[in-house]
Image (spheres, rainbow, N blue to C red):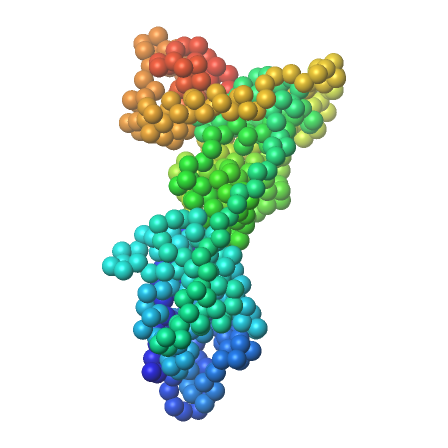
Length: 508
């Protein structure tokens, strides 16, 4: 046998397209050639594979011309995930393992020089792609043990793990010598219960802000909090995750898959909503993704979770403007000259900022030192189109010292979260989605107003000069307020509360 085929998968964003590793052995001057639009990391696999085979006691064909082709040739390949399939292809072409049995399997794994298998990024994406693949006979996915444990979360497919190259080789030895037990079943990833460190009851005062946070959680709405330093904006923002409903299995898979691609997946956090809080020096590429090959940014890593931007006005303007499209569409397409990647980014934005450079504008305790022009320039760092896309914009005033010294007030996160789950479930039962996702005909149908409420909202919209987007976002917020109160129809009082949540910077 001088030609062998081994199946594997590449990564392109969250997709995992199939790759066929073709290995050919021929007579001639000894060489090891790798073709197929391979990145530097893949080309370096020649040395890793050679060393791993030799140190494992396996024979490398030193006296042959070894040609490895990664097909399709126009698909970029990166990382060390092809080490294992290349090594198996060489052994199969040399007749050391049964090449025919490899057809029913897909392989991925990075090799150490000693033959140990190292985990690879994107194991969940590979498993999802294999489950969706229209194969007559579904293949078994063979991965390093840690990656196999991760892939088993997908369900509905056969996964096996191995710790060493020799474990895989033993399973494919010719004839009766094969030992299938060398490939291990995935281990169950026991979810570690992490204690809740951020409870809403810890925030003293700020009842209006807490209510706004509850509305945001129930409707999957974005929030901007504006107030002086030290008023609890960051505390409130970090407690939003604890109010959100649990993820469904499919949503948990979506979140885990994109974290897996970035190497940030943790089994102990399986099923939890993610909170991402990048520093205000983050670039546009860090927020929405970029690089070559394209990598997911903070907005995508926060998929189905919360993206917290503290000190919003200090972020680079280009970085903030890059969030406009994902706030509307829930997706980010990163395009480069040679590559394009589509990442999900259905995150819930919560942002916090000071009202002026000194932070004391509107404070009753400390006078503001900023000129009117300085205040306008500072608030102008947040563009109108971006502000227009934020559903709830609230002021978070300073809390009196007596209130800070008093005992904890308000409700615990678990109590508020129970109301949020009921309200969110009402929306799902009625329209199949959260209120924050309503658009077009669905928005008109499920947020229909009676004549009194409709005329009231029209007058307010005209008086404040709101855009059509602001008009529709008010409807989504009012629909959520009604759901929290268990009302089937949106009333003028629901609209009144929603309107109060859009006046923090005086922008529509």
